[in-house]
Amino acid sequence: MPHIRELSATEAAYVAGIVDGEGSITLTRTHRDEGRRPIVSISSTELSLLQYIRAVIGAGRITGKVTARNQHAPIFAHLLSSRQALPLLAQISPYLRTYKLHRCRLLLDEYLAVTPRNGRYTAAQRAAKDLFEARSIRAGTNRSGQSLNGDDDDRGIRAALAARAGRP
Image 1 (cartoon, rainbow, N blue to C red):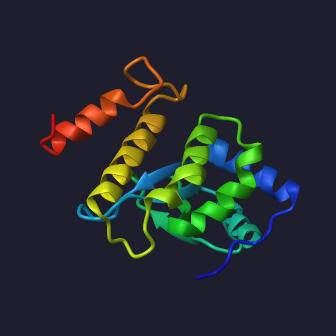
Image 2 (image 1 turned 135 degrees about the horizontal axis):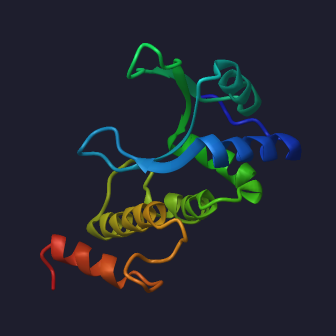
């Protein structure tokens, strides 16, 4: 797995601007039975831009996306996933200006603490990971960074997780 390059301040600010404008910072699962993992993606019709981003970062993959109609321009995406996304987020976080900063900080502050390297969870670890994923999804839904139920704590999410687990 290629390592993320150490970015200059200018490079980090540029990549942050592209992520703020054209990218996404998410927790995504590929298969139904697996946990979510961080993904930093940038979509663009400019393949040369994504090739430049990959060269600056030193990692990631560029994929082509299916266009809906023949008259649409081809679109491409640069993807950086799992633990490899975290060093990039650490470098660009000082320069993020949109709601994506909240998602970035949540991933940097908590993802490693709730994700065992081997993927095997105890019941307590699974509950902590579920709570983290719910908070991350909430961070993506409400761009102001506040709780969807009007308060800034996790009572509603904890209650929903407990109900799902069959606890009062």
